[in-house]
Length: 175
Image (cartoon, rainbow, N blue to C red):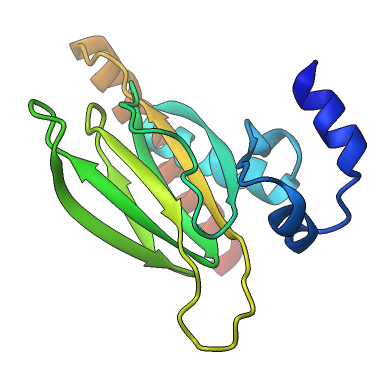
């Protein structure tokens, strides 16, 4: 209820408006593949080719704000930085001490294996203009499936059918 009231009272107009008046909050949009045909098609191709499952989330973070406190995901994540920049803090799984920092800018990608403790902070641009923009990244969650001989054989059959169908279509077009 508090989040709804906050958003209703603020009536944000743009991402920049949210960044200025949003009190440092990060906006999280889960399962974006349901809102865009392009993302749905991308997700479908990725997971059909690999036999895995997962979803696509987005995180809009104001400069200087932490998107989420340090945490561990129970799935692999591929981070696709869309706008602005973020500093990722990768932590040691045992001591939880900072192990590495990685800065992503628009167009960069980062793979986070399941079980790696991490957090991310929106960075303030250092271009001297003082024009601050929020950071936006997509997170492609990849849920690992337990592999069995049956799963591997089923994936091989599916890939073979896809390759055969592609070859048949290409051969038919060539004729």
